[in-house]
Length: 209
Image 1 (cartoon, rainbow, N blue to C red):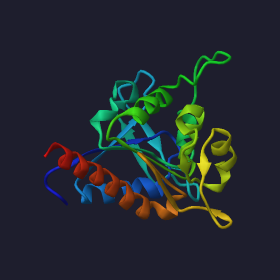
Image 2: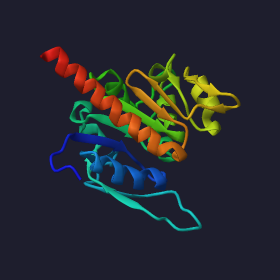
Image 3: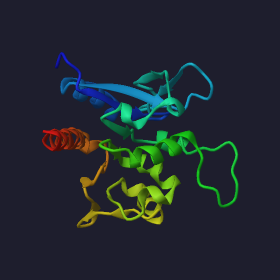
């Protein structure tokens, strides 16, 4: 493990998150020198505990989150990842809605800020593009990949899904947005995510020097 932190990677999470991604994030990013910090909407609580998707009726992982997404600035992080499975659908929930009003869920509002933040990379895997689908402005014209289950959602939200033959692409990079197809490509996704962060930092160093 690298002794000096290169910065933080924020992972947006809720109940029913993907267990494979959670385990690999906690292994891979610290090995590369990055701290992992989990963030969510805490509904006025100091902390909330979330569980992974159950497998064989067992919930393998839990994470206790103390970082409220309303209090977070995207610039605190080198990159922000939406974890896969059904967690991001839960974070689209709004208590009050009005006809014609954009989604005001805290996690969606945070994504709007993050998408326009300078030098902050954003990542999704599998179903987690669902959070972006809550506001067409977040996906319009962006090249992405995702699980086959949500292709219609992503395309209806304006995303340009990249295909490789009769399947969606494993990995797509479009500017500050890095998307992975499903947890089976999590290692490739993480390698690319870190590479994009460090590429951007190298450009900044060259520009400053």
